[in-house]
Length: 505
Image (cartoon, rainbow, N blue to C red; front, side):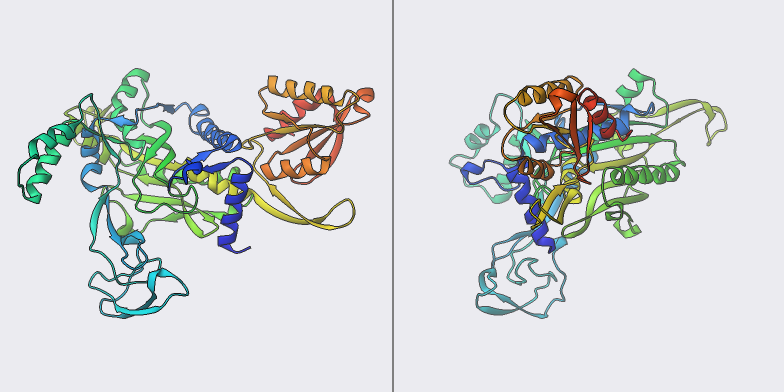
C-alpha cells in the first residue's frame, strides 16, 4: 500500500469506527481541529495512563502537577516565547497555499522554474525566476510569493470584564494616525489585559519548581511531570492529528546536578525509546536521531528526537532535550525569585565549603500524546490475507493494539439471541466491568462479522457463549492476533483476560 493511501485508509477507519472525527463536521469542519470519538478517547486516555504509570507511579523521584492553561504573560516573556515564538509566513500567489519559509524547498536565486497555473496538475504551464529569497512554494513550485512576515504562534486573548478594544476604538476614532502610531496604541490597550493560551506544558513545571520542592521535600535529581493541552497557531496543519493547533502533551522536567546532565540525558533517551517500543508491534519503526550542533537551541547542550516511521516517513514523536539551567535562570531573573537548590551534603566547588547552592540543570522528555495516538494506530493497522469458512480468499483488517491500550479489552458474544445465552453473556460482561476491565456485549450480526468488527477496533479478546455453556459452564475465548480459540471456564474469564492484558499469561 502506498504511503499516502495508508494514511488515508487509517483516517477512514478512524472515522468509521469512532476513533477520530473532524471537528464541527456538520458545519463543514474546522481546519486543524479534531474530536476523539468513543473509541478514540479511550485509546488516548489509555496511552496517557500508561505514560503516567511509567513516568510517575512507578518512580519515587518524579511527581506530577496540573498547571493552568492560562498563565501570567510574564511567563512567556521570560521563556522567550513572547518575543521569539514566531515563524516566517509566506503566501503563494499561484496556488494560494500558506507555508513557513524556513520549511520551503531551497533554490538558487535567479534560477528558472516552471509550474502549473493555480497549482493544478493539468493546468497551463508557466515559467518564472526564483527570487532573492531562494525558495519556491512547497506545494506547486511557484516562485510567485508574497514577502515574508513574522507569524506569532501563540493564541492571544484577554482576561477581565472590559473589552480592551473599546478603549482603543475610542482613542483612534476621528483621528488620522500613521501605521506605527496605530500599532503603538493597539499594543498599549491590548497589553493591559493580554494573556496567552500556553504553547507548551513545560513552563508550568518550571514556575512551580520552588513550590514543589518545598511542599514535597524532593531531592535532586527529581522530576515534575504533566499532561495536558497546548495550543499553537500553526501556519499549516497536516497529516490528520500529527500537526494541529490544539494538541496534548506528556512532558517531564527532570532536575539534575550540573555536570551530570549528559549521563541523565542518555538515561532518559534510552528509557523513552524503550517505552514506545514496548507498546508497539514493530520496534524498528522507532529510532533516536541525535541533533547536530547547528540544530541545537542556543540554551541546549544536547537533544535527541525519538522518531517514528509514519506513513509519510520518519518524523518526530518525542524530544529529549538537555536544557542546561536556562529555564530556571530566566524565570529567576524575570520574577526576582531565587529558583535554586541547596545540597547540604556536598561541598561548593567554587569555595570548597560544606553546602552547595546551585541552579539545577534540566533534562526534558517531551512527547506528543495526540501524535502518539496516530503513531500507535499506524503501527497497529494490518491487512492479512486468508480464507473464510467457504474457502474463499478474504482480507482481514485488524488493529493489533497492545492490550493495555486497546479501547475495548474483551467482547462477549452470545452465539444466538435465545436459550439463555444473552443473559449468560451479560453476566460475564458485568463481571468484567466490576473488575475494571472495559468490555462490550455484542449480539448483532453473524459471529464472523462480529469477529471482523472487533478485529478492526483492536479488541484483543472475544468470548463466545454457545449452546454448551449453560450445561458445562465453558466458553470460547479467541485471540485477536493469532485467531486461536480455546475453551475456558466462564468463571475464569475475568482472571484470564486480566492476566493476558497485563502480559502475565
